[in-house]
Image (cartoon, rainbow over all chains, first blue to last red):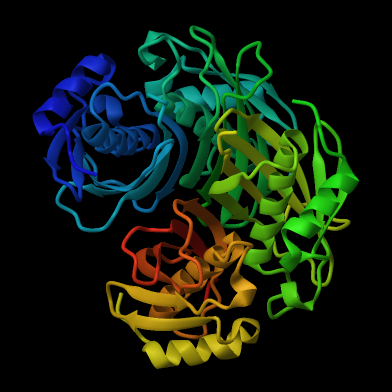
Length: 139
Length: 139
Length: 139
Length: 139
């Protein structure tokens, strides 16, 4: 399914719809195959030891997959996360942004499924993977 | 496996080990079968519409199961979340605390598994369920 | 939501709808809170060492939660599994039936969520837990 | 981590270690990035309507990720599945083999994590995705 929003439109929508997380996320890239989203790591995202906390890793995957859906459905859509499965595989590198590579695997009439592979910026070994399902409300 | 920490000791450990979330969580009850933990909902936990955000639901389950493990292993333990699976089933009631009922299903030598069923305070229909696995480091 | 099928009706429906697994499963109990379903363990369900294989543990949870949904929607319903999350926690006891205690956590208009806790018959420590989501087709 | 078994050695090990599923699976390809494994679909793998059943989709992912681990650890290893998360996204094409593309995301000292994306042979839209964790016993 083709893209109906570009990177700038998605970023603007995100800022307006979720003002609480304004500045937390940035979209690095977007095409039909992949969306790359970055958690701009700040003090408030960290656990003792300087690594990104679990809830923020969850949030990064959730925001990324949600935006990959919106990029195809448009900003009116109100998709709701119904399931999330996450594997935490390595400790994030301290004090470094976390980058998620997101792919949409299914965009059906009522359900969408996407996955995110997350890396400490500049590192090639995945920190975490997540797959999430969204319920898409009827038009 | 018996409890080696009580409710007050767990609460104090939590405040010291995770100062970033101080005041966010309270332990309502703890016995050998169940731990009940509460997210003391404030503005910062909410999404537009006044409901608790996904990352905070994740955090509540994670903190609750982690404390159920610590209550049996003692405060020296450093368990790490390796897997989380969450089903989001109903919209939380706006402006109400979220309460998790936590059970430990396995406490092995290297892995522990627990589950949390979460409710808007005063409601009987579950908002979400989570199961999480923790890796327990060698002594 | 109340039950519209009883134990005998469910068992008969299962045999007719899924003749391939006839004789594999038996419903031990059914009320509004819980359904108990048994995998009648035979040679074909085992892995070397005599324990029940992973795919058969999956099948037990899937059949159990599916029947808990049908018991409420009636035999015309055609629910489809969309997500499954399983934790394998202990080796099943060799040569013993596997019993699942199933609860339905949500039965919505388009999605249903249930969970199963599985035990080797006669043992109190869970072998596995599973949570599954089903998509319910429009009437 | 480099490969210590090739495709023929893996296939032979599989036949000897799991005689119950002999003939069910074939390894199409194996290199350091990916293992491709095929469920050679027969009548016994099907549900009414001619599509591959959920437990067989589970089994395909489990066998594939297990072999990706063994290819690196050698045939002496006895890894045990501890967690599985599966999204069922599309109905498999009737009467066609199911093919899984498997990647190993982590191979640690005590835990390994892999993922599988599964397709009806010849189709490009994924039928299902799975991620699984294995516990690796101490040497």
